[in-house]
Image (cartoon, rainbow, N blue to C red; front, side, top):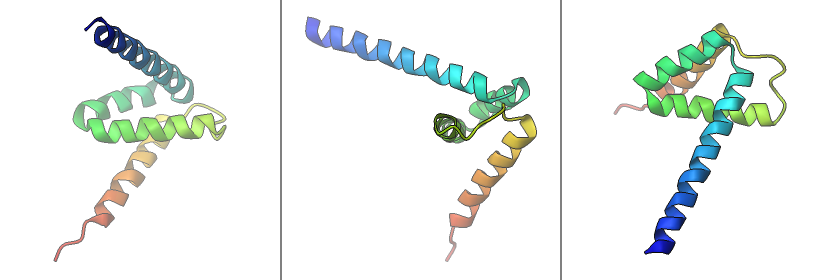
Length: 92
């Protein structure tokens, strides 16, 4: 029982560390306005927000972000991702 509780606590701590690292990276690669937009997207569509965050972290780690992404750039990225989803829908 104690081992399971200890493992759970370790997992929770690891998740907290990952979330903190994610927040730091997003703070570095997004302007204030873009972060606010992403927060609004997270409220309306958590899955899309998660997808954007993972993409931004990935390109940040690859060194492809030289300056913070602006709100207008984030809007373009959101449009691109949502259009891709729309084109995948096939009606018969």
